[in-house]
Image (cartoon, rainbow, N blue to C red; front, side, top):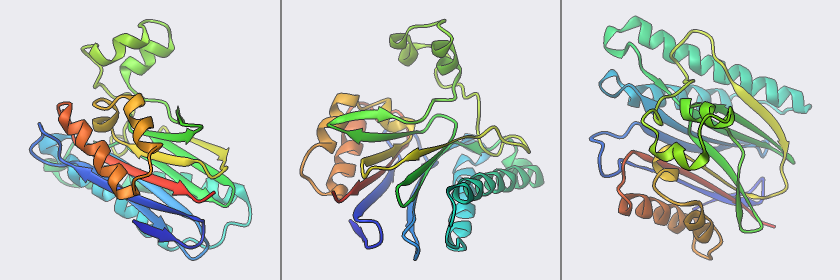
Length: 251
């Protein structure tokens, strides 16, 4: 567990290969800087033999390097613009790497990202990893799965209980690095020191919201909570790589 001395809180993050995959294509990272900003990221690479693991690493590395250059945001709009521009730079990097090397053709990655700037929170979404906030012992989903079944559910063509068993449940409608331009969902929200959880589908497809809420409400350390979430996901099949980022603010 690492102490963040600028915003009052702590964070932990971890990835795991799961029980089915042979390689880990997930990436997770949390960064802080001298201005007191916090950046959290989860990427779930896609492409398998086409180097999904490289796509997720390229994306994380580009954004991390840009964050190291960040100067103080005097306006909320500046933070929003920086995050949009940086995510699009990551998209261009992954796309260009795939274009240069035939072995990488078709690689891409999801990206779920949260930037905390004082009492503001900026949430970016590409694909189907997720960001939650935990308030009053309840999980609240802040992102929207950009999947085919997500589209079917939102348009009333299937019921919520059909999502997990639908034959096309793994089909993404959006990913970073697949095209030269990017469809980015980026929202600005207020931040009231709530606990935040970012994760790949390897977690939420294998662990119920009730179990996640129970763990987050407990008194264990953040590392213990992250490990417990991953252990439950693996105990329930470990059907995919697992990435977890957890942030808890001091009240």
